[in-house]
Length: 359
Ligand code: SF4
Ligand code: SF4
Image 1 (cartoon, rainbow, N blue to C red):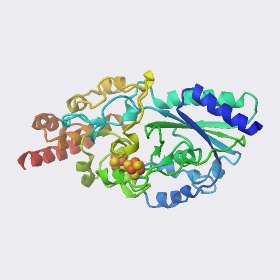
Image 2: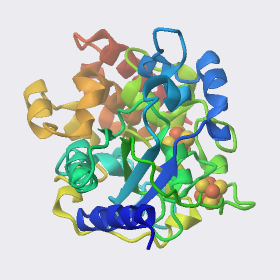
Image 3: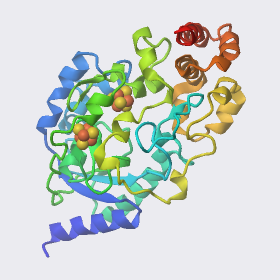
Image 4: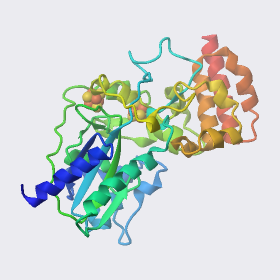
């Protein structure tokens, strides 16, 4: 077996030993899928996610080419781990029935007991150590934070194709995957890119409640509920609030409706099992939460990212969309909250609720 192939095989084995469900190797190239990126940034589809706009000293967008930030990198190892647990979906046949109107929705990836950045990085370090055992190659490891569009490298590493919903889809695992990447100066034997298996399906595009897709494979993040509930600070545009439904943190709709997720396997890993109360969380609980409880309950959780103010703002919108009369007194209280963002969204929610109840 040629040495190059042997190293590639060793990496795949060590990724499996570290607990990853899939792993592959992509060459470092300016893939055609990256051509969209400068135009996408220019059209402000990234909204307030300014980290995506970071540039080199010479003004080039870092994420548009690895040659801008890591000219020494020759290969990218992409590892994926399944975080799907045996819990209901947010919509469709796998959802709780009847729809729990008094309950919100937190994205599946954010339920876990341990912050996935930590658990994925720990495993990546294991693979990195194996790679460096007999080689002095240079490496950088990332979970979400790297200067590269991870899903494009995941495609060229054969881990999965980029679905029309812009998520990485694996034929056997579906799309409930955390990705971790290792950039290395080692020239490794690349895998074949994963073929696109979306076919004529448009289920994800049709299901999006805020029309966030510009078209297949292209997202206007500023309309996406994940962006609105997590990244957006302050006011959420009024025309998008009704479409947010009961979403408190993130959105899984375009993955829940994907046929490739119908038989997605589940994981028994303890760190990915949900914390108490986060699957279909009670809106009342979230609206009445104190800042001390927020800090305590979401310590080490991605949910911290939306901040206390964001969580309460999102809860107010979900209450407004619920059609539940019993939320009126809670919203009346929130409408006078000292946090003006929370208060103004609660006033919107009160009006929305009254409109729903009088129709
Ligand atoms: S995550 Fe939700 S809002 Fe965002 S594109 Fe998918 S369905 Fe639309
Ligand atoms: S729902 Fe259909 S179009 Fe969307 S990612 Fe899944 S297979 Fe592709």
